[in-house]
Length: 413
Image (cartoon, rainbow, N blue to C red; front, side, top):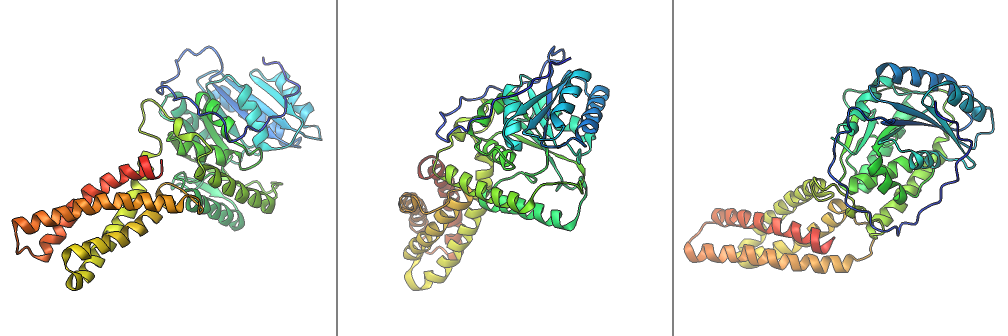
């Protein structure tokens, strides 16, 4: 039986200039005979005297009956003023594997940060005290982390297999929030707000010092940093029933989240968060796959624009001049689009430098495509416009690959 802990020190914010984290080792499954708790499920609470006891007892029963490893439940009380601390202490005394901490300051992110920082369990999770998410999804949530398949796992209410019961207001707000995240921070995960998440402790030890928010934006920020670091995020469809008695202030929370998005976007654009140094030794370079996909989409649009403009200009200027002008216009648009969409750079800082470097990459592309046209005209002086277009497409593919490498390593390192 765990010993109840009366208090925990308030978490200090770590500035965004934290030293670059080390490269993570290869993922490995946890041993089957792990002697200590493998999973620590944190329940953050503030003035939850009515819901706390039935939540913890139900969770404890579920884990005892279904979870094949040793576990711990940690109640993280953040500055409750009702009987929540008394109930938490009693539950920690009565239920084996149950603990509690108390923080003097309010904030869900603060409670999670404190509980996860002190825990020694290899897998850390949390869920909301109202148990809106069906506990049947808990084992599928943490299994990929225990097996070594993934680094972070989240419940999603927006996947095809999810079953969600909630009012239209919350449905619209949730979908708008996640669309806004994808538009501003180019994230790939689907549901940032579901109170049902887990992370491997070795990952949390490196990410938590970089997370500044201590309120509701905490887990969104953690997810964005994990994705930017190239870590693997596993999504689990969940069954979710809205709590009609939820006391979350939607307006103030939404405004705080918007401020968090703006702050995080500035920090990432300014290179103040060393997420690119955090990666697995057995993985691809951080962010490579999503960057390649976005670069390919931008490149396809740019190639189409280039070919259309070349076709329009060719009768008036000749093949070489038409190619140069079309490639120049396409390069300016391509650099701007890749700056924002592929590499997530916002604001005006460094725009001129980025475009100058982009033009340098353009010269490389011009040399490749123009050289290919010159070779075609030398080998076949009467080549048709169709042959010229095919030559440009093939040369453009080589120039595109080289351009991506230059953009990633030199223009937007």
